[in-house]
Length: 176
Image (cartoon, rainbow, N blue to C red; front, side, top):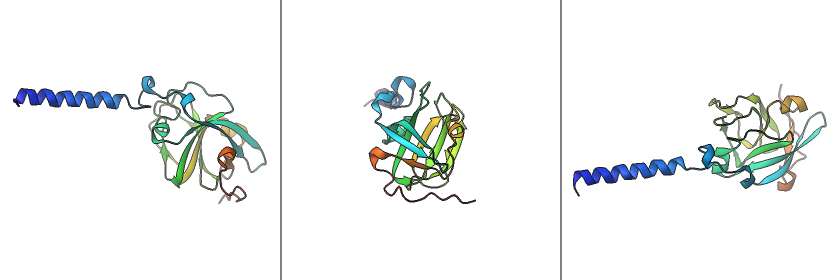
């Protein structure tokens, strides 16, 4: 093969690779999966002050779904949320890339206990937001919801349709 043909073949291969990468789910608004393609379930946040807040949540459980999350979504209802499910629990870090609305994030361990709350995460920020411990679920709510509803560390998240957590009677403890 002549050098010119080799160069053309290599450049064509590179161009094809770049085009395929551009079309990965969630990488831009044009290729984002619609929220209707995410499974949906009811979740509840049970506060230590005996309140129960129910949300209809989109569930992101595959790598592509978790990568996209709420990117490119312009609004969310007051009783809507997104949950990111990790089985088994793992260390995770979130960011707000291509996220257009401020969010509150609840980091939840495998007992269903809220171990960290990030309020008003800034839209579009590339700063990482982490719990500092393994989590089984991250709940994203509209920014300001945690404060408005008194949701904080030590509260419990339950997913009744998933029978989760497996032992909901286990209390959440808060160290001071």
